[in-house]
Length: 340
Image 1 (spheres, rainbow, N blue to C red):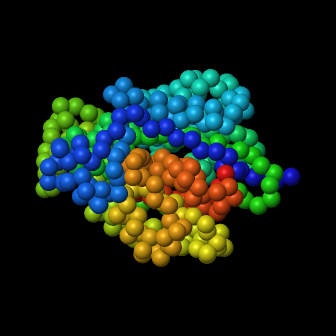
Image 2: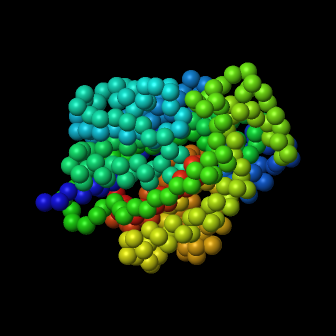
């Protein structure tokens, strides 16, 4: 009997500190709270504590999942952690989370270093492991703390990004038909420089020279140690690439938009999402936007949006959901899954 992979549950964790538009407006007086909301669709975003890492957030998301779903930790036989803000260059953060969770030793663990497309990629790995007979229950975690790499005077990123983590349980099922998939993927490394932290890796070590601050033409301050985003280029890439990916995933699945109950894109910002929705002609009632009180949480945006929409009764068990992630890399991916 063929084994299929199925998304069983999602939980998410947000740090306690809230950064609202009133606070940001006091720091950037030429942008009112209403203007920030209009441009981003975000009212507030969560920010990790000074000593709180992405692995800490992911651990708490996993514990919440275990508690809510009454999961036996001994049933988990693989852990995947998607992050671009690991605790250390080495060892892998997944190993540290594995230890903190108290998972059995006969359980694999690995990190994947992807951002905005990371949830789609991670789901494909979980599906592949289960349907190849390697694993039966995969704990897939996402988590990022971009706030630790943003200069406090860089409005271009501070108004957008929030810190968060999610935990998804992907399990084996003997139900007929694919529960997760198909998938489509794409990459264009030529866009790498448009969303990047230039220093801190092996290509350019952090030091006194990389810490020198500069101010761009829009008044944003940063150094090579900080997150840099070229907003116009990211927008151009998105409006060009995403419609083609959307068309491709529907063709792969042999479906039309009428067969899809909900569409969940990477929750970059409301302005970009609405531009994509209108360009692709996605019906408003199928299109999920859930970032107003969390912000752009990178690889966690799609699972948070799904979980929040389910909490509000928008998405129900058995609904067909098209997910599509895009951004840093450039990297993109799309999939169709059945809601838990």
